[in-house]
Structure formats: structure tokens, C-alpha cells
Length: 420
Image (tube, rainbow, N blue to C red):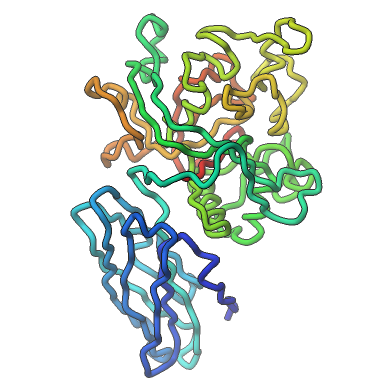
């Protein structure tokens, strides 16, 4: 049987979790609930220990998961087993709403032989909050997370930019859209208020994703491309280029890994957070433009006008790249917050489900929107920013597109958000 090491509980903070140890024993196994660093949310999990008789093939044990928290959160719990060939869990995820705070979990033991003695873990991780957690930021400005080693000139440091909360106009008005029916999902413009958050200055790189992939490659291997090459060699040959060919599930798995590794809360940006970081909170059609519809900007050194080829990596722009560009390229095209490549290079996954009519809600102030929550629209996830394979107009800050969360496209990557 494959051996599994035991990780100290501190490595899992601030995830809310319990470990079930499945073993051949006649006494109850002591289980202690991990203390959360986010106790302000009043969130806790409570589950009994689980014992298995290894000679009882197909034994199923059912336990009730109880969630106790305030009235401000909806929570998705992801269930993981240490060895899926020996232990299986049903369901593989649980959604807790404000009304439903308990759920039954079945853990089935399937040893390879009647006399085998196996050790397994069932890990419960709470990482997706459908309402925003508002806590005090621990820093202001820019900070970074060292993923491995000394960096060696590569982007192993995950540099995060602090985005102060504020109110901005999201979407487009009918005058700017005109007769362009392809932009109907940008209507109407509406006021959105966001809380503070941190966002990655750069898209997640091949090398950063490789650090995650080395530890958890199961089901999360990026799609190979003829231009860039095969994984994982891409990570070594082009370490500072954005990782591509990753699904929404892959991106979320990276965020969970990063959260466990650092003790902070990492996730994908909501569509509103992404647009706010791209526009700088102003009416910018492109991240670099001073005013709406301005496609060029001034060179701060020469005073001359910079062309789109100097601002973003898009199709037929003459920017010098046949496919993606390094994540720190096109510094002149950074947003007002200093976030790079929010136009072109790769489409970026957002947290939200996609609804083309989502903006058509009552005319009121939206506060930390999380996207549609109804089951009808749980088909596609939002992607933003355009890519190296699209024209410049696809890289507008307000342009919305969508993709099935399981798809791995060669021009789709992601950047991360950290909640304060």
C-alpha cells in the first residue's frame, strides 16, 4: 500500500478541518478540532472519530457533519481521502447554506485483501465562501509569498498588490455598446462596492504552478501545446511565462494548496474584483488608458505615444511574441493599481458562474457581488482579459466571456486573490 505521511496541523491553517484516522483498533481514536485563525467568522466543524475493522471488506461508516456559524456565510466543503483506491467518500463535496447546517458523510473501506491493515485520512476543507469575509488587512501596499527556494531570478515569489476597497461603475452603458449585440452581457452599467483585497501582480507562472503540481499532480496536469511544449518540461524551459491549459478546477486546487501552505485565504478573483483591478476604478476601456476608448498611452520617458503592440500581447499586434509573453512583460500596459497583463496574454479564470443577464438586476448598489447563485447558471465560469490569440478589442476591461470549468484551453490561465 502507498504510504502517507502525517502533516502537522499547523500546515492546514486557516482551513477548517478534521482528520479521520481509519485503522485496525478497538478503542476510540482521540480527535481534536483545529483552532481557526479566523475565529471571528464563528465557523467550526464537529465530527466523530471513525474506526474500521480491516477484515470487513466494503464496510461503510456514516457520520454527521455539523457546521456552526453566523448568518453571513454560505460554505462549500470539499472532501478528500488519502487513498481513493482503499477509501471512498460520498458525497465528494457538501454545500452548507444558512438553512442547512448538517450533512451525512459515508466513508467506505475497501481493502485490497481481507487481512490488510490500512491507514487513511479524510480531510474536510472549507475554502469557498459565497459572501465576502471582512477582516482587517494585515498589511498595506505590496507583499509576496515565497513558494520555494531562493527564487533564482524566477517568479517563485507570489507578489500580491493591495487593492483598497471602493465603489466603481461596472459594465458598459448603452451608448458605448451601441448596435454591437456581442456586448449585450455588459449591460447595464451599475454601481459596485468592493471590500479590500489583494490580487496577484502577475499571472500565475509555469514554475509557480509546477511547485503545486509536484506535490499534487493527480488530475491537475496542464494541457500540452505544440508551441510551448509538453508539461512539465514547459515549467523548466519557460518558468516565467503564464501557466496555460489549466481548468477552473485546476486553478482552484492551486488556490487551496497555496492557502494550506501559507495559512492565508487564496482564491480566484470575483468578476467584480477582476474588473476593478483592471480599470483602477475609473472608466478605462483598457487597463492603461487614461480615459474611455483611448487605446494608446504616453511613454513616460520620451513623451511619445505607445502603440498597442507595446502595451499588450494580442493577436496580430506585432508585439514580438508568437504565443504568450513573460508575465512581467508590457509594464507600460499595467493597470492603475500596477497589475500586469490584464489585457491579452491569457484569458483568466474568475470565481463566478456566468450569466449573460446577470447585470440586469434592480438598480441598486451591489456590495461584494459573487456572481449568480442559482443552479440554472452553474454551467460556465467567467473568463476575463482576452489572450494572445484574440484581437485587442477582446481584451477590453469590460469584455465578458465564459468557459466550462472543466475545459483546459491553451490560451487560458489565471491569477489569484488573497482575502485580507
